[in-house]
Image (cartoon, one colour):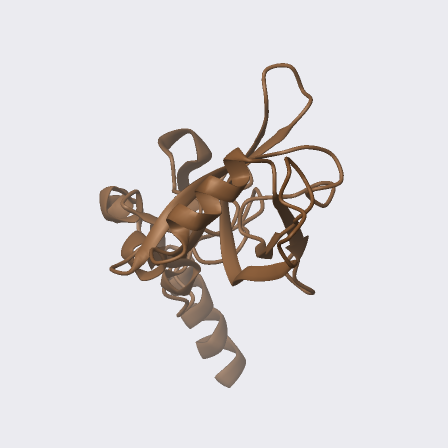
Length: 181
């Protein structure tokens, strides 16, 4: 009798499906949920709080809190408001870095340190120093000629002008923080 009741409950609940958001292309931490990187997926309602397909407009105004792989069903903890990382007192800074100034295979979502590297372009009197202890990489690309990596980082707005100036003078190096991939 109990087995028959359990089977009946399972069969009845099998038809309770929700329309959830599924990732179709890898989305790095800190990257937005673009229309081409998500799709609708019908899943059995099993108590997990999925981001519903009906809420995709709201989700598209957020960024991934962690790197999401294709096939991942999105839950609220996997999203964060953009302003949480780029809020008051923060700024995005673009860096053009040559080989040796940036770790290989840098990816959006990684945490890095930004270091002043003296001795280039007549700056012999300066000491090497840490400019940003924990910056979030939000974008990574290769320059058109492929000779440099172009990365965008979120840093404190007070240090952003200095980082931009040193980057323009080719005096910046980026170091990857452990566990950031």
